[in-house]
Length: 267
Image (tube, rainbow, N blue to C red; front, side):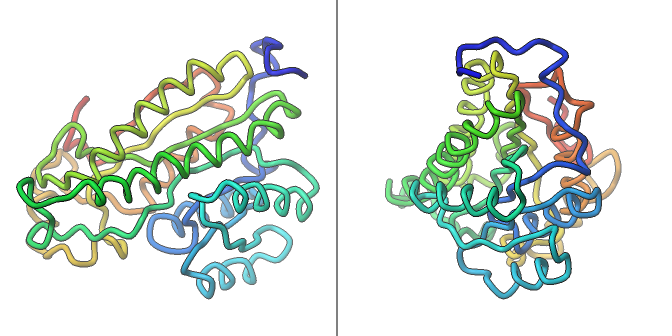
């Protein structure tokens, strides 16, 4: 199948989650761990990409022999990403069906310590862009040969509701996620004829991940009080929404940004 070959509606349906090979970048801790565990719960085989969390990644893989592998790869490095995909197919005998771009360049959601508009330098933006945009570019492009052989593919990018509701102005992080949303939509338009869907799932502040560990409890309580569900979204709840977009049920959904934050943002 060549990249220009149109995909018929019947052939673009993703395989069931239980037969998929899924890559979760940054998949060993925080939201990434919840994503990994959600796919494993549904029977998928999972490639747990990690950079600094080798012990956590191996712990998950060891608990699911034959169904999970831990692979160290910096998604900002194209050669490392290519090697990751080759390792995944060698281990599982099938190409990756779904890519979840979750990896986050080092960041802490600490409103008091954040860089303000008058002091932040472009190097902070460049760091976040390299993790969010460059990383997603590398994983998606590396997945394309396998997607084309399968006749379908799923990409789910992890975003943020700060685009719609910048209650705390994390300038570099939010700008990078805005760029990732643009990539989500343009890649959806370009890759749709190949049976590939590209979507984003955007959470708010999650209770609780490593990145949000510096957030005061009072902030979580204030967010909960502002949502119709009167709760702060958990990593497991957001992971379930990602499962939907990776599943056959989402075969006609692409280029979308699904906000999962208990109704704080209604977009």
